[in-house]
Length: 219
Image 1 (cartoon, one colour):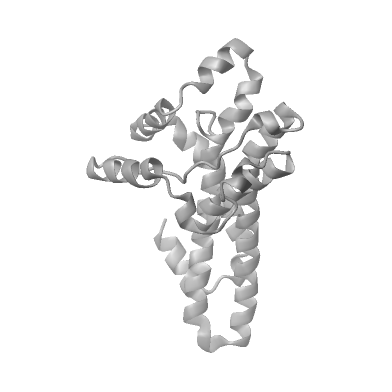
Image 2 (cartoon, helix red, strand yellow):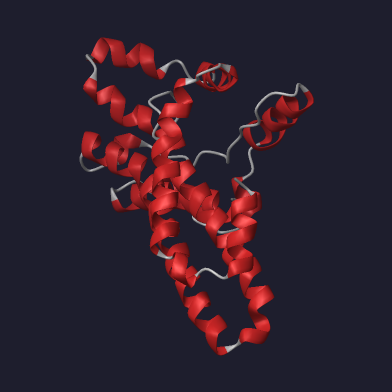
């Protein structure tokens, strides 16, 4: 999760750089140092408060600073930068799947390491689910999530201004949805589950029995 979230944020900053904005670069955010991506509120306070309140726990990294005014093409640049993070999570999920296959092939050559290989495969399988989950979560059209930066261009400009001002209330709205019976989020997250099952079924022949048992135990 830590790796995937950091990669997500770096992708935003790198995409902004390619669109002409150097804000993230100058702020030192194009780095794998996790400390640079910790947000006092989103990374620490909100998850801790929700845990103590026995509520669903959500959080996030410190958003990478960007200045859309520097983009060479404002609307196209904003959409590209907004979707760069979710595109990166899709790539990570695919790379994890390929790695599962490679480890499965390696285990046939080195059967004595099958337990260790099983642990890594189980972690990678969980990583596939987490990254697909991050994709659909960030595509929610609720500010300040990435999907809202695309959705606002589908609205009249006067609506979009108010829509983007939801800000922190958007996180509260997500928590409310998560607490609901028959939540719309159950429907929204279904593609992530379908994608995960599809990928794991395609590479099932390479997944070691112990790794498969551990993954099944996770539900």
